[in-house]
Length: 110
Length: 112
Image (cartoon, rainbow over all chains, first blue to last red; front, side):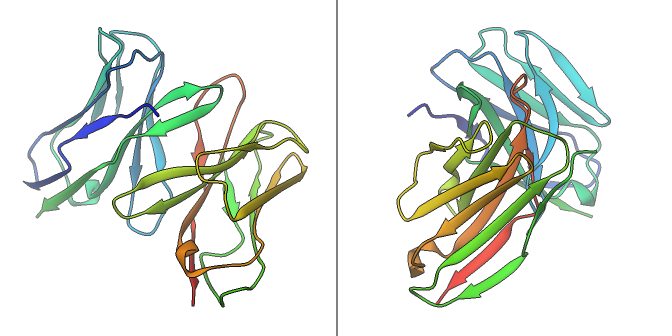
């Protein structure tokens, strides 16, 4: 099946630092979604992108739909301890189905 | 806000038992999904449904069945639970017109 390569797998940062992560594929997609999962909880939708080149913000989070339509990026500015969690990218692969990346585990040290 | 609820947060069952996991959404979404999440394997789709009484197999349907008798409710059934079905089970719902999925809090199932 189609695979999304999400990187980095994990990040350890200091509070206040900015964070960047990305998701790439060899296939072209029309949708990119970014989710965050807190420990022991279900993923929460952060940002949805539907157009190549689109840049969308949600508070300190900014996500971009790559111009090639094969990748997407998520940035978090001025990280805080509650940003800790796993961040997943996802894209629509067929019908209403989503395929998810493996996730980026973010740790923020106070 | 979209609300997806799952019947249990934690569940412990014995091998061979029949297990029902219930999911309810309150946003009149057409689509509903069941995933399992395991360390190192990510989120894997078990079954999904795009309408009442309709169901489609996902990537790992073996050992599971589903039921959707009402639009708001989607049930996952383990006919005879096995230890390799110990996992985190996540339900999600979404509109047919967009691809956004909204997740419940998850059920951590342990089969002993």
